[in-house]
Image 1: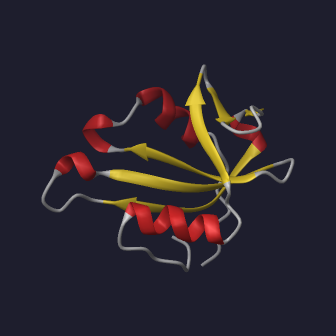
Image 2: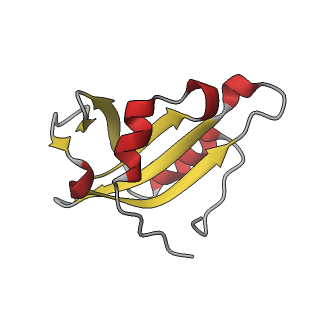
Image 3: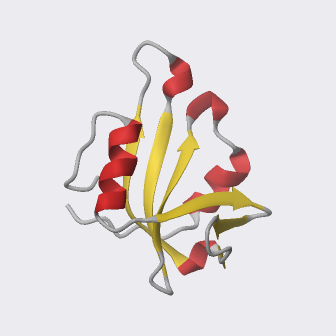
Length: 104
């Protein structure tokens, strides 16, 4: 995992945005989309720069992961997803194909 650590998902998203990961990514039709610019990215056009996993100690509904992504064209942003019981198999499969380049 990356050097930066966060206690909550909100803190992670805010911290990443402050560090230049400003695009808001979502997943649809097998691709990641930048909500603002409407650009779309395949798995091979993205890199996971860092990720942060949050486990709901008192509520399993709070299990989530926050990805800091950088696209080949320089777009940097955040993608948040559930993991565990509520994870989307399609999203999980997509992210297994995204290269990881995290600095320790």
